[in-house]
Image 1 (cartoon, rainbow, N blue to C red):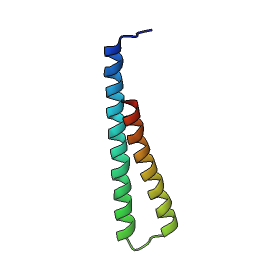
Image 2 (tube, rainbow, N blue to C red):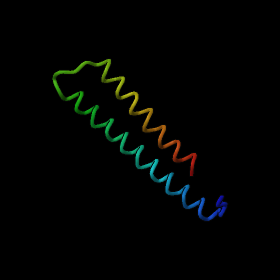
Image 3 (tube, one colour):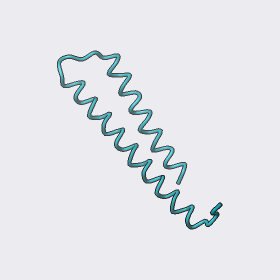
Image 4 (tube, one colour):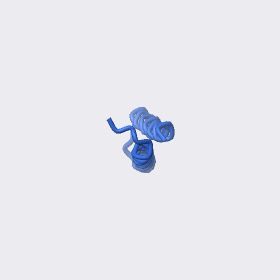
Length: 70
């Protein structure tokens, strides 16, 4: 097993960056869904709120994982 701290720190940095990027993408998609859901005529509020809740929790969860992993 490779226990070189420099290589492990580099890998952790890459993983944390990817988690931040994925969290940002999920949050931006959630914002897009919110805007599209509010501006269009045919909308049902409970499913929209469920989707938005999952995107907010998922996006912030990914950002928190990236922060904890770094």
